[in-house]
Structure formats: C-alpha cells, structure tokens
Amino acid sequence: MEIEVIEKIQLCKGSLRIKLEHEDGRVERYEGNNIVVAVGSNYMAELMRGIIGDPLRVQVDGLRTLAVGTGGIGWDLQNPPAATVTQTSLENELFRKEFDNVNYIDTLGNVTLTRTNIIDLTTVFNTTQANGALVEMGLFGGANALLTNNGSMLNYYTMPVINKVNAILTIIWRLVF
Image: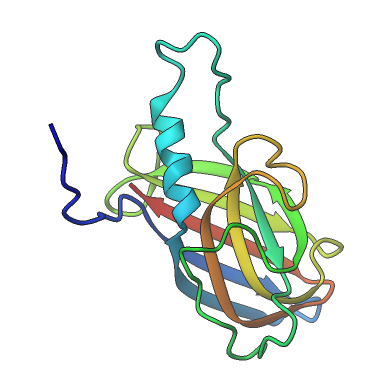
C-alpha cells in the first residue's frame, strides 16, 4: 500500500517574549515568532517514538537548553536573514544555558500543574552571561545538548540586534503542540 503525503502540517509553533534589564534600570522588551526547523521535526518524531519494541535503542533526551548567538559573518545586525527550516545550528553560538523553568500553560495563559499542549521554557542570562550583539537563538535537546554546537535543534529565531552588556536577559519561549 502506497501512502501519499498531501501536505506537511506544522505540529508545533512557538513565540518568544524577551526582556532586557539594564544596570541603569532601563527595560527593553521584544516579542516574536519562531519556526520549527526540519531537523526539529525529525527530533520530535524520535521523541514520540520512544524505545518501545527496540531494546537496543537509547532513550532520547528532551529539550534542555537555549543557545544565543551573534549571527553569520557579514549579517546586517539590524536586519538579519529570516530564520529558515534548513538551519541545524546557530551561525555563531555565543552562549548556551539550561532552562531555569519549564511550565505547562493553560488556555488563559496561566501556569498550571495540569498537563497541557502549551509549555513555557524560561531562561535567564545573568549580567556575566551571553554578553554581546545577539541576533539569533535556538532550542536544543537530545544527546550532548548541554555542549556548545551540539544536540538537536528544534526551534530557531533571528531578530534585530539585542546588545546585551552586563544586563539581565530573560527569554520565555512558548511552544504550542
């Protein structure tokens, strides 16, 4: 029996809320929508498959880290290239950190202990972490996701430069499945 693929459906979408708190008290806020990259779809399928019926298969780690970067050589920092589904890593990774909080979110946008199809992944970079001209970021999981330039990328996002210098950067990455 032959199966025809009619269309690829986006099973996951995401959005970001970013807050940059400067030492002088100024606060900058940004929002945006990310894309699921092609290898991210494969990673999700691997997570869903699990290890049932395959005793030699190693359990796959879920999402663990958020990485930020300074973009590719020659990028216009005010207008970086749009994120594409072919991306497999950051162009120039600067810093990677495990999530500080992972929460289920209800349909009203509130944190809940009940399992839902919405999660918020919160990462806070302190004043000494990830200082630089940030224009790209991504979510990573799987093997070696804690190591720079490793793991499986699920989501990717590019934005006009956020100049982080000794500031606190909070990123809340919402995923809806």
